[in-house]
Amino acid sequence: MHRIACVSAVALLVAFGHVAHAQLPDPGMEVVPGRTALLITDPQNDFLSPDGVTWGVVGESVTENHTVEHIGMLFETAEAAGVPTFISPHYYYPSDHGWHFEGALEKLMHAIGMFNRTGPLDLEGFAGSGADWLDEYKEYIEHDDTVVVSPHKVYGPETNDLVLQLRKRGVDKVILGGMSANLCVEAHMRELMEQGFEVAVVKDATAAAKVPDGNGYAAALTNFRFIANAVWTTEEAVAHVEAAHAAD
Image (cartoon, rainbow, N blue to C red; front, side):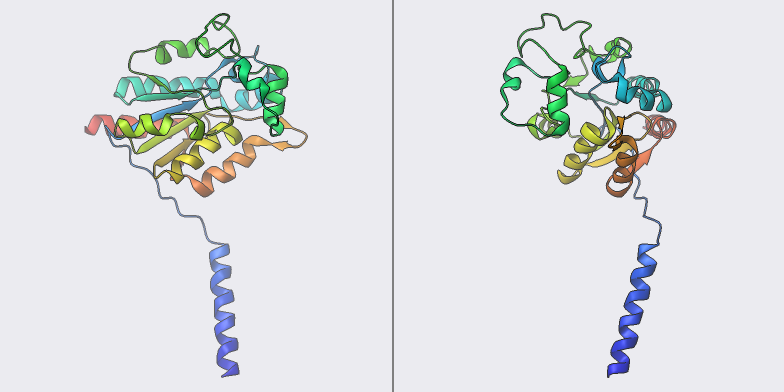
């Protein structure tokens, strides 16, 4: 009996060893017209413009990934294929600066005035500000068919109406890009997965800060691969959308 138990234990260790060294599965995601949407988080100047307040830490990653161009390609492809586009923006109003505590990046964002607006019903000073859209995206965002949801206040969509807006339109598959990789993009991916959506993250349509404490983009890539249904390049995302549109 002791020998059998030992043999069984060894067999279990070998099996777990094989699992530990196995390649992660790639579930993939099928783009289905009418059920698939493009979601872009924070396509705003403070993240994506050289004049933005975070450019000093995100600029290298944005440039390396050609993030601005790739997000633009996703917008253009979605419009051409009739894929609905959703924007989840990040805004801070004066009342948000009355918070009694913040996490590390929240504290920094409040300190540098990132995404500041004068109020939820006031657009004074909005045009061209850090909270405004990047100019090259405005033709896609300021469009009757684009859904701009209420702002998220930390990183994920738990504090806005994104999930409601997706479900009300029968969307259960999301192509996800935007800023920044290990913060709002990752938080949106996690919550959408928890809410029962399929999510394909476009890994070169995002970027993140590189600071002495760590590389946010590298951290996000690991979690994208571990959690999302699919991790695509922009080229792959465009090909999936175009193929689905052609077959429809």
